[in-house]
Image 1: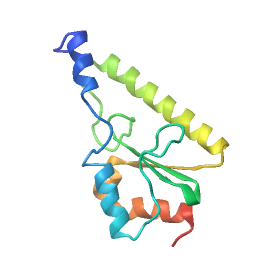
Image 2 (image 1 turned 90 degrees about the vertical axis):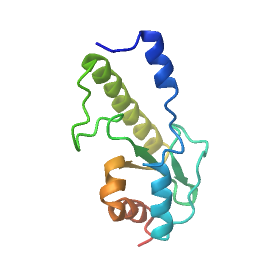
Image 3 (image 1 turned 45 degrees about the vertical axis):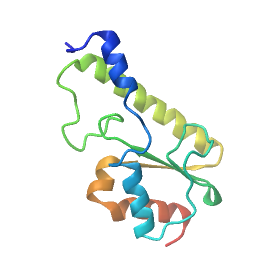
Length: 136
C-alpha cells in the first residue's frame, strides 16, 4: 500500500520532470562531446518526443530510465504498490513499442539507450549512434 493518498501521489509524480535529468540526458550530451558526435538537437518536434534527434541521419534517440521503462539490469522493481507500478511500467513499454513502430514506418531509425548503459558503458552508447549514422 502506498504511504501517500492518491491525490498526494499524483502531485508527487507530476513533479518528476523528464528533461534535464543529469543522470541521463545531460550525461549523454557529455558522451556526445567526448566521442565527437555532432548534429544532434533537443526538443525537436517528432512523434514520441525523443530526447535527441539527428535530423541529417533521420535518427531519434530516447534515453530510458531503467525503472520507468522496465529494464531488468538491476533490482528495479518496486516492492511497495507492486500492482500499480507493474501496470504503469507495462503501459510505458507498450507506448515505447508503439513509438518505435510509428517512427520506423516514417523512415526514422530509433535508438534507445538505457540509463545504466550511460553510466557503465558510455562507449557502447556512443557506438550505437555512430553505427546507425555510419560515422565510424
